[in-house]
Every structure is written in C-alpha cells, then in structure tokens.
Image (cartoon, rainbow, N blue to C red):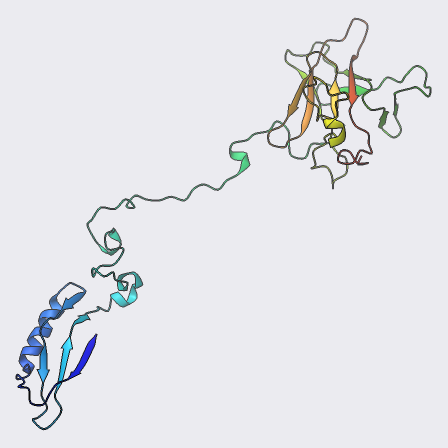
Length: 277
C-alpha cells in the first residue's frame, strides 16, 4: 500500500537513504524466513529547493519465493501472516493436527454384503425332479359339473380354480421317508420375462378386505395352505412371498401326500395378477 501526500516546499527535508544502506537492508530481508516484513520508518525524498516535495511511505510489503508460486495453498494468507493450513503438516509445521491419521474411503455399498437369500432374484420355472424324483400332480375330480371349484388341463398345464376354494395338490418323491426338516415351498412367480422379476401379491382390494382375512397371519399372500404347520415367508432381499409345509411320509398303500391349497385372488384382479400368466 502506498500513500502520496504533498507538503509545503518550505519544510525542511532530511537526506535520503544512501545506496549502500539500502543494499545492506535488502540483503538482510532476503535472509528472513517470514512471509511479511513491516517497515515503520518513513523516508522523505527531495528533488531540489524549487521543485515540489513528495513524501513516500512503505507500510507493508511481502517477499515471495519462487516455490510459493507453484503452490496456491501457500499464497493464501490470513491476517496473522500465516496460511490457513500452516498448522498442519502440509507446509512442514510440527504442530499436531487431528487430521494426521490416514483417512481411508468407505467401502462401496452392496446389498449382497449383509443380506443373503435362499432364493435367486429370478427363480427357475423349469420342471426339474432333481435327485429325489420330486413330482407334483393334481388329481382330477371324479365328476366335473357346473359347481366344480377347480380343474387342471394336462395339455395346457394350467390350473383353473375359483378364488378362496380348496384345491388338493399331491406331492411325491422317490424317498419314501424324507429327511427330518425337509419342507415343500410353494412360491408363485410370473412366467413371462417382462414380468418375472415382479413379486406376485394379492390385489389391494382383496388384501384389505375382511372377507377371508380375519385372524389370518398373511393377508397379502396369494397362496395359502391348510396344513397346521404351514409357515408364510417373505424373503427380506427379493421380497418374494412363499408358503412352506413339511414333506411328510405317504400313508400306507399310497405314493402321494396330498395337501389343500387356496388361491386368494382372481387372475383378472387389477393391482394383483392382472391377467399375467
């Protein structure tokens, strides 16, 4: 910062600083390590008795090293004459800092790190008996009439059943005595690729209705079973709903174990199956 002020020509002026004195002071300033130097002395210069006299005062100046120009952090100074980061080890200070420890970036989030599912995201819809020869069958009604509540087409492989009516489903495997803890899981899925990732649930109208839902533990499940040990499961990862029941030993003289199922929506329900296979 510089100030220029005019004074009267009649004032007495002191002699200017000699060149040797200025060079000596400048060499001393170059040896200093501080960024700022304060000069409080005022030097007045005179250019002759007849000419106008001028007073020049140097209040403050900064000595910048070539290294400072390469690092913009060091060039940003605070009123105290220190960089905002001068208390850290960035510019070689020995002061302790809470940020001296090594900072590592957090691991990327993935639902597979903490959540596991017994079922894949896209379940298989291929008939596969497996090593136990597992089979499913629908026993045809003895006589089909207008009051028949369900029927199964072997050629189309489709089950036609009234809503909330019992339908007998038969299960069989080559192992007549299943291992303890073996269960059968029934999980509805959509067959078309454009819908297979969606979860099959009941439509909102039937799910919140009091009819067929009183005291039932799973009002939003489409498939129900009347076995006393039935468990209704909703996978925490895929949100798919299923029903499990124990795989029991067939009765004497029979190869099949029959369980009664119910389907709690119509195929045309909006917000539910909505005519999707």
